Image (cartoon, rainbow over all chains, first blue to last red; front, side):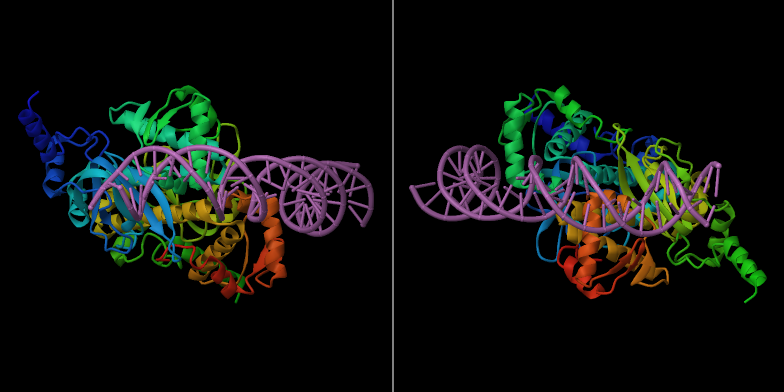
Length: 248
Length: 248
DNA sequence: CGGAAAGTTGACGCGGGTCAAGGAATGTGG
DNA sequence: CCACATTCCTTGACCCGCGTCAACTTTCCG
C-alpha cells in the first residue's frame, strides 16, 4: 500500500462519522444514514492534540463534548491542596466532557496522554439535533448512563478490593476496551504512567510496580515499561471473578 | 391545625409537581407552568413504599426513573460472590434509576430505608416529553451529569482519603443535602445503619463505630444511635477542606 | 553528555481490617 | 408482663496489607 493512498484513506475517515471505524462505539450507533449526516455537519474536527495538551480544564465553561478517534486521554481533578485524582482514561470511541453538562462548567480536566485526534461536538447544536433526530436523544442518554455505570463499578473496586484485584481488573478493562476496538486483547501499550495507574486505583506507585513484578513472576503478564502482554488472561479473570458486578 | 386539613394538604401536595415543595430540586426546576403540567400528567404516584421494599433490582428491565418525595433509599449492587457494595443514598428531591438507561436494565438495586413516597416517571413517556418541552431535555442531562459528578467525587474520597476524612465528608454531604431541603444542617437522623455507612465509605463497620466515638470525644458531633448532631460543623469542614474538589 | 522523569526494589511502620466478646435496642411468642 | 432471640452497635486486642521513605537504575530529551 502506497503512502499516498494511506494518507487519502485517513483523510477520508477523518471526514465523516458515516465512515468512521468507531461509529459502532460512538454516538452514531444505531442511527440512520441521513441522521448521521446531520450529526456530521455539526462536528468540528481539530488538529491532533499533542501529549500534555489539555482538551479542557476543570472550571472551563462547558460548550462541547469530545469524542476521541485515536490516542488516549486522562481525566482528573485536583483538590484544593493541590493533589490529583485520576478519574479515568479515555480510549478511541469514548466521549469526555459529560460531567460539564450539570453546571455548564467542566468538573474535571482532560489531558492528552498519547497524540489524539478528537471530534468536538458543540453542545447547543447537539441539543438542537436531539429534537430532530429521535434516536440521538436516547443514544446520548445511553452514553451518559454508561458513564455512571462505569463510575459505580470503580466505586466497588476502590471500596472493597485488594491491590491485586484492582490492578487485575484494570488490566482486564483495558483489554476488553482494546478488543472492542479491533485491537489485541492480550498485547497492548499502557498509555499512562505507573503514577497515573496508582493514582487511579488508589494505590501507591511502588505498589503498582511491585504488583507488576509479582504478576510477571507468576506468569500472568509480561511487562516491559509500558508494553504489556496478558499471558495468563484466564487466571487474571479468575482473580477478579466473583468480585465484580453481575452484568459486565 | 386539624387532622383533616393536614390530610387535605398532603393530598394536595401529592397531586402535582407544580405544588411539590421539592420542585426546586427535581426535574421541574426551571420549567414553565404549562410544561410542568405536562410532566405532571405522565407521573404515576404509588402507595408509599415500606422499609426493606425494593423499588427495583439490578437486572430488572428499566422502564422508569423514580423521584423520591420523602423517606430515604439505598442504592447498591452485589458481586457474584454475594457481597454488597452500597453505591449511594437517595434523599427527597433526588432521582434513582439513571443507571438503567444504558442497557435498558437496571445496573443497581434500590431499596427503601425509611418509608418513602415516590413518583414514577415512565421513561418512554418522559422521552416523548423531551421533544415537546425544550427545557426538559437539558434539565434531564443536568440531573444525569450531576450524578456523574457525585460519583466522581466519591472516587476521590475512596481513592485518597483516610477513614476520618471519609466519614466527615459523608456527614457534611448529608448535612448540606438536608439543608437544601429546608431541614436542619446540624441535627438529623441517619437513615442508614453503620453497616451501610461503612460499606459505602469502604470502611469496616467497627471503624465507623470507633470514628463516631472519636468525633464525639473531640466535640465534633453528638451521636446516639441514629440521631446525630454536628456540634462542631466548622471543624468538620476543616477536616475535609483541601481534600475535596474545587467547585462544590 | 547531563539533568530530569519514570520505574524498580528493599526496609519499616501505621491505619484500619479482622476476630472476639459483650451491651443496648427491638421484636416475638407465651 | 416477661423470657428469649435477633439485630444493631460498641469496644478491645491483634496483625497484615500497603503506604512511606530511601536508594538506585533506566529511559528520555535537550
